[in-house]
Image (cartoon, rainbow, N blue to C red; front, side, top):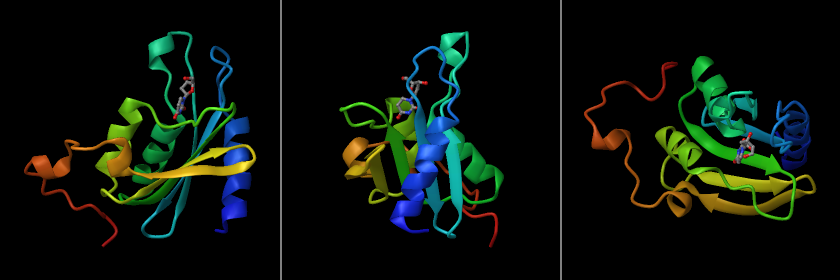
Length: 140
Ligand code: THU
């Protein structure tokens, strides 16, 4: 998918956010290493802590479809500040990424800044710290 098409999809995902409490709409797109695209938006809840972030939704969609490696992830939100993923989402992204995986932070106008997983979560704890025999891809 071209960058401009990904931006259009991100705007669409933002528009689908359920964010009646924060009124802060976030959209996410993941491209997996097997070339698939997955979408997410934030879904809040009247019991506030139960809300889920856009990135989290896209990761869940990816795993459900059988992909387990993030090639790159896009996040789009409003406002002047960079909508960088929260601490919890950095860890969730890290589970399915490597140190150099790109995390693209976008505003409605387009790409603002690109980080790597390692930039946002240095010295992280991950699957390699555990004896984890589960294959990264279930499609092989
Ligand atoms: N949010 C995301 O979905 N992703 C981010 O990267 C930052 C924050 C959501 C969570 C909550 O629904 C709203 O934005 C305000 O924090």
